[in-house]
Length: 478
Image (cartoon, rainbow, N blue to C red):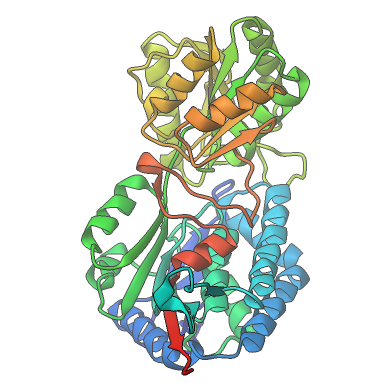
């Protein structure tokens, strides 16, 4: 199988096209060949940007009915090809098959959510006659598209994270250049081809895969009006600094915590913490990395989490029962293992796991982790969970707030005052009560504070980021 670039309505870099290079893609679980992906250079990326700019001149004025129809057709096509695309995703990035199927379901829903919003989004009428000068005037405000959006997506959710950029852009009349992750180029380019085949006009969506050096040369092209980036904090903030005169939306890393209060339902909390910490080998920016347990429950939660960690199904991502599959690469697995080894050497107690083989890191639970080690302060992006006790809610909140990141936090309690206190004082983008912080619905605002990013996704919120309000004030003659 070969995945091709999409530029100006043409698929480029097919098997017989020798003018465009090919990237070999291997399965991170067993090293088998998945296929190849076209790999462009300056010429192709520049053409993609210019094509998107040209297409914007007409797509910005496209009827809402046309945009809605396209979004509906894309959602339908995703559902039709669900099993095929999920299989590709599992083989390309090692995502457990149940997670891959769920990602395709969410991808289709994301396009449908955008289609739902097209009918009414972006128009409002505001009264101005509260000011005596406004008598006889009418003010309407319309949100208008801004132009070419350059989108960069990571490997871990190549379908749905791409959809969270593409769908709002199409809905609002913007055009896009989508840059695939070099670790998941086939899935990303296949989604672009599906959108092309669903009837997306030429140039409205362009998809490119290629070297970082090319992006670095062209990211500040004058036709690019916005960057939507999901990835590492180190890269994201550098791009934000460089593109100081453009709109920038950053969805970056995290090291999410969950707080377990005295009235928590421990069986449910344990089940969700295991899924949130070890699911997809922890390769989720809102994966649970730290669990803070009230001291009265600490010993019991240590026992429950240790047993559940040891029993977590691990290995072949094509097996439906697998929770923790491989990491994306040997290098990623070695990095995770180094976090664990450093913590143990500094005095942390290993409760379960702690070993790795190839790209598979066993689900790992640690206690007594020093605050000075990387595992306490940085994003591990792997199946590793720390557990620590706290005396009161204020202590737990302070521990969460010490992090340089802040996307989601989980809180297990039924006490309304506790919920309101945590919601008011936690420095995070969202509080998830009685579930893991890894939970995200596709119509909710999603994003972080501090090093975790700037701006919000979630279909309507991304549409706001991708548009500007434009006012029309009309005075009627007496």
